[in-house]
Length: 398
Image (cartoon, rainbow, N blue to C red; front, side, top):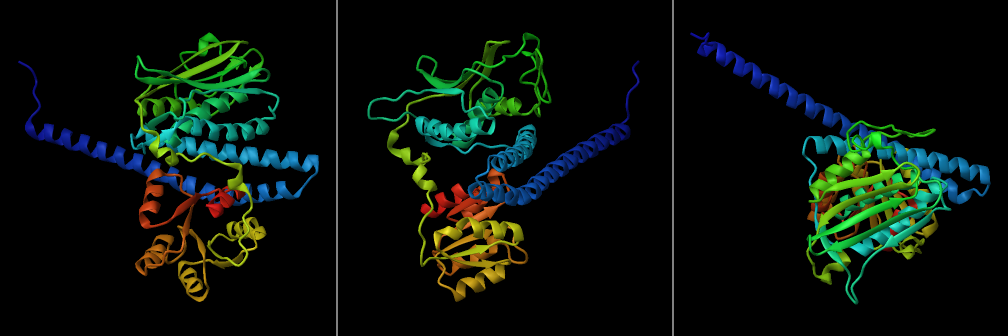
């Protein structure tokens, strides 16, 4: 006859398990909130660091000075990428990362990546690397897919960044093939870099596997980039794999579901145009900047100083509303986390009064849920910190 557990003992065990589960969920949420706060607190000072670095880069001409500024900019962006990777990984691990799909023009997306690749090669001092882009286009019709444009670009940019980083000579190739028989698109990034030794092939997509060696080369990383790519590709409905041989380069492939989409909504994926980055002439226009961080305020003023606009500043939500009432304001840059009355309260009061002046949200948050909240609140656009001068000019030109 077996030994049983009485009802009271069983109830006690069940209660302990429930409490342990609740404690684990609470600790996970606490950890995630901590990461969110760290992300926000890092992005605020990085806004000034990268912003003033960009301004100095445009002012100085000395070779050494430019070299030092490039180093500051590169390492600052690396820090931001690390923070973003940790945040994305945490959300993916909790299964809280959602997609925001729309009709996307593939060739427009790749043209945007071309612009980023120019800066990427310069950052790594790899301007000599040849870049090859293999795209397809039907006559008089762009190829459209239904996807999350930001996440698809994130995957491709991560693979391109790795290819450039680990390739000293030769080329990096980006392309795609439509496979109608499989109802998918095969994206690929190929390079002529150092390759990956076979002993590391099974570990390359595993979390926290940041370092591998090829010959005398010692490579550093967080071990999160390709893990995030794998999760994102699977979320988008595809699969990812690679082929590689030491000394002969690597080829990364991933699939994405495909069915023909009308090209009528091509304007939903805006292609970056160099004209967007030109400094606009805003003589006679009044711009209000509401920002409580002293250095971010100075940086913003300096960045748009050459537009000839009249610049007004406020450090609180209440002061911003007063400034708006007393001046003929044409555009507002509004920080979300203002002391007292925050940015959401300010725009709520403006929209309730049926004031249609364009309002640009400034935020140090990198979360999609915050971007959605900003859009629903009535903002016309958002500028995520750190914001570059090119992005500011693009916003002003639009």
